Length: 340
Ligand code: NAD
Image (cartoon, rainbow, N blue to C red; front, side, top):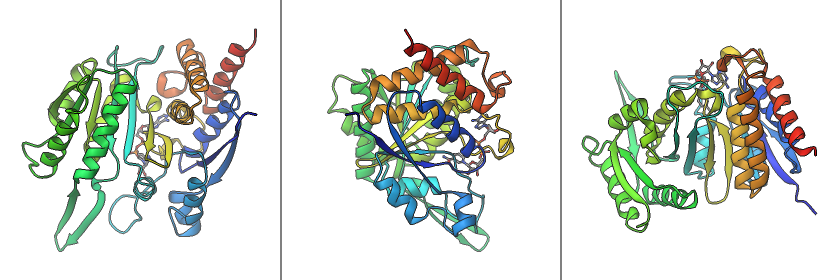
């Protein structure tokens, strides 16, 4: 009997409910049985329950096979609540943020021939959120540990080995941030010695940012700290076609959630015109995590077919289709692939 996967769904804020609904519709055609449980997080949860990440949400995620997450909104500045996404990563110890990038057929991009993965440490660094206001000044503490650096380095090398990739590049700024980046760099270099079949090199974050802009085809797997990984991966998204097509996985030893790397795009909320590709590709990563490799491949190739055809794409990709039009087109492509 086929297994039914219980999936926790955080619809999130802004465009979140629209792109998650689109994804659930398309997932209906992948041929894998799901039971979706909607849970609250983010600004909406804060306004309704006074808690951006209610305990019930955590309980449901912990008892599910995986979580599909829409973007959640966090008001900026002091006095507002801590990001639900960052809190979720820290509470569930989802230490690896995996952000793969490749060109998609039919999607205009600054560069072609890109195929790389950013593996971002997801629980430490400046995003630990240890900050103080002191009179007219503000202080932040950057936490880098040997344990945290070691496990993300191993994760990156294991991913490289599994995906038959050739090189892992540690991205840091150890020439200036001597203690924090220095520790990270040294630990990754030590872990690299255990993977003789995979090349290891390193780059300063500023040089890596320029490489992404000029020649991203040179890059394979990047392993880096939290804030650098966050910024660098939006830059890579920008050169392969935009945030609308960039997926991610947040993975730990016990739990995982899957989300687009973009935010809640509040200006698009309610218009049903946001691109759901990124969260759909994240759902494909979720299928792989669940071991449903064939379903993941079917879903990805249906998405690529619709993108390539170009008739039902959203505004950010030069089309005029709505969020649900794209989802129905992807579902239709999977249905068509099934029929003899
Ligand atoms: P954003 O990613 O929401 O938007 C950046 C730009 O990309 C905007 O012009 C937006 O319209 C566009 N865009 C993003 N996704 C798109 C899509 N699917 N289709 C079409 N266009 C899209 O970033 P922001 O404006 O910096 O942040 C808005 C809110 O999102 C903030 O409250 C922030 O905290 C939150 N955020 C959440 C997450 C998350 O939940 N993981 C990540 C990033 C930002």
